[in-house]
Amino acid sequence: MNFLRVLRSVFVAAFVIATTSLVFAHHEPLAKFDDKKPLRIRGVVSLVDWRNPHAHVFVNVKTGETVSNWAVELESPIDLEASGWSKTTIQPGDQVAVTGIAARDGSRQMLGKTIVTAAGKSIFTVNVVPPPMPLQPHPTPKWTDGQPRLGSVPGGVQGYWAFPSATALVENGVTAPMDEWGLLKNIGDAAKVAPMQPWALQLYKERQERFLRDDPMYLNCKPPGGPRQFELAYGVQFVEDRARQRVFVLIGSGNNNYRIIYTDGRSHQGQVGGDDENPLFYGRSVGKWEGETLVLDTRGFNEDFWFTNGGLPHTEQLKLTEKISRPNMDTLKYDLTVDDPGAYTRPWSASWTLRWVAGKEMPRHLCQENRS
Amino acid sequence: MKRLGLAVFVAVCLLAVPVLAQEGHPLKGSWLGTWSGNKIHGNDVLLVMTWDGKNISGTINPGTDNIAIKNATLNPEGWLVHIEADAKDKSGQPVTYTIDGKIENLPLANRVVTGTWKDSRGDTGAFKIGRQ
Image 1 (cartoon, each protein chain N blue to C red):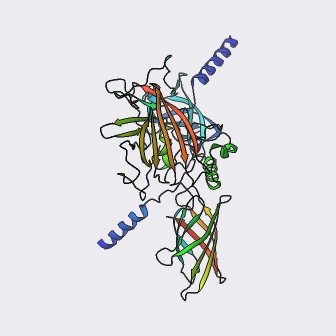
Image 2: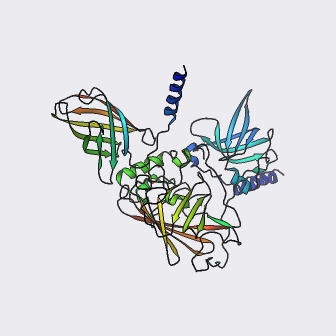
Image 3: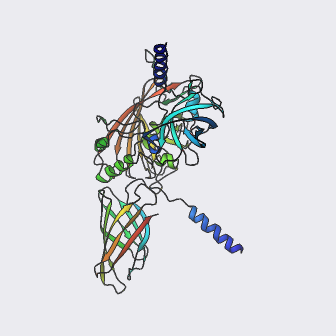
């Protein structure tokens, strides 16, 4: 009997571990929480705060005669709801056991890794995976003149691009393991990531050593200019305005503003919305189709943001050559060449792909009041 | 009383203006502060610096003294700043300034450079500028 009880406990524990992944936050979680400080609390739910950018569960923990209130940070309501959870999944008064990691600043906050109810149910697990690829690739959707469509087809299946195969810039051919926010597993790899000038390398290292906590995209809701808009968890969407010869690139997160790509043959001079005296977060993009690839020339960036997850620096001298193609219905190919003599010793390239998420609206995760 | 209220309101508005972040080269931008005890050019100092990918250039007190920065370096190991500039005193005699300092609060928008200044006549003092 005891053997069966032990076996059941092992099975339950294994099941919980197997089905529960560490929830991923929008900011680098290690900027706020310390993975060297595992924490386990047990108590009574006092409040469920279900709002952007992160849901929180507040738990009253009794120690002797003292009751202290803990804030447990979870993923965004967007991802929690996509995984089947809601703000009524648990109620104030419910008993829960929580494991996770503690806040670096010693406050009573933790990043929730597992939450288990008194009935033994594991809740608020997040399982966000890309849609399965079809066995046979579907053909690239095209306009009547044969030009590939980058966005949805009117009257057809709606969708958007997400699940980038790389979420931080690394020069092609370089192996430098990092997490999805661009935090290096080994700071010794920093110099390999891109051919940085000494000041840029040192700045990059220091941003990394501070766990990316100074990222202005999260601290100040600054736009994810440059290639960063194609690295985001909530994806991008192309709106092709052929009548006005421009493409709008919308983002599913950040401060929800947009980039304009002009395809009317204009030069970089005299564009609406920016000139040399007014550098921009998204720079000024002009594009033209070369065969089935949209080739973009973008310059005129300001220096008020990070142009990639992970914190590689850039300067106003940054010029990007981006090549965007859709080799089949479900794949977007993004090839980038970075030319910034202010921060790098030579031009360098990076490439990745994104997946088409069919039949869904792009999520709208807003960075609000400088919180994300 | 109304005037005082307006003055307080304006002061609060000015204080509330956020410092613009600058995530590129750490010295680029406008810096405002003091070089204490400078009898020739006064206590207050403004530096405007830029970075072309190879060199730091700029001006001390643009619009008034217009002292061109002759040589400036930034050593990323410790973020050590070295600036040299040739100026003239009120009688037109040459004076060379040397500033050595260090960037503090590097990741923050309100980073500062603290250190010392000295001139070719032997005067010296504390130097502190903050990025605007």
